[in-house]
Length: 128
Image (cartoon, rainbow, N blue to C red; front, side, top):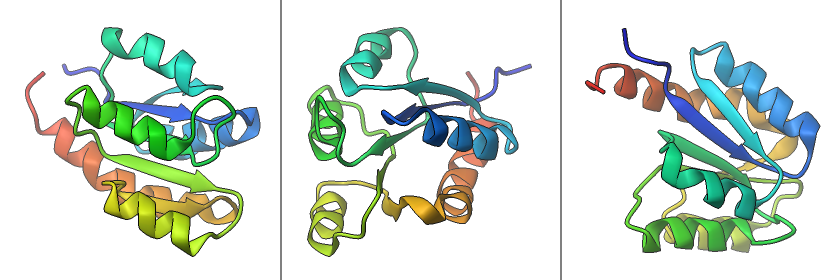
């Protein structure tokens, strides 16, 4: 039996990390949470997630810079950025840089299910 697909959540707010873990755990994902981008990047060589969900305004490295760092390492992982406020320019910039989505935090449950659910289903069909 394959292990559950790994989703990594990078957000300084433990409540957001818990909520994402609850929502995606219900879909069968294993969720690991990190408070900072550097903490996540240190773990990255040991486990490659099927998706990364990150706060757009991380204290140590902006979410867009995290996305660009993943791409520079040759990782074309789906990345979803979360933001506490709607910033159309930031959302457009993130999407042009390759983000899968840019979600406003108060409305993350349905949006995460809509975006991550298909990724988890595809991963479940891939041999590990």
